[in-house]
Length: 189
Image 1 (cartoon, rainbow, N blue to C red):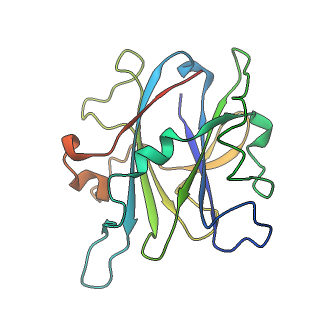
Image 2 (cartoon, rainbow, N blue to C red; image 1 turned 30 degrees about the vertical axis):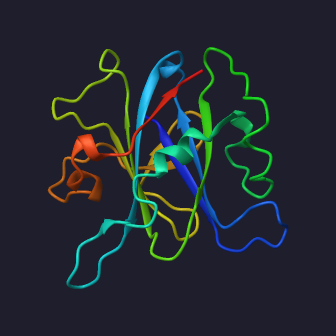
C-alpha cells in the first residue's frame, strides 16, 4: 500500500528539453486505482545553526498547482530521467495500466536557490487507510541531485521513502495548520 517518491533535480540542461527544476515521480500501488488521494506538497528552506527549517516563502502554497499539471506515465519510465521533456509530458496521452500495475504520476516543479527540500504528505481515502493521528505517508526529499529519505523496497523499483514518522522530530509540514496547507486531489486511474 505504500507509495514511493523519486526526485531528480535538474540545475542546468544544455539539451533544451528540461528547464531548471525538479522532476518528481509519485509511484502508487495498484490498490489505490479508482480512488482519490490528497497530496500536500511543501517546499522547504533549510535552517542554519541558529534557525530551523522553514517553508520557502517564494511560491509558497503554489506547489499543489504544479502537481495538478502532472501526467500518468508508463511504469517502464520510472528509471528514465534523461529523455524527460517539459514541453511534451503534459500534453502526451496518459499511460494505460492493467489492474495490477503500479501507477506513476510525473510532475515538474520549478526550482531556485533556497529551495533545499520538498516535503510531501499523501493521504489515502479513510476507507482504505487512516492513522489515528491523521497523518499520511510523509516524504522529505533532498533536492540536491536524486535523493529522498529512508530506503524502501517495492515490487518494481528500489526507491527511497520516509514512512509516517513517529519520531520526536517534526517536519516543516507539521508547523502549517491543516486548513492553510496547499492540497491537490489526484484521481488515480
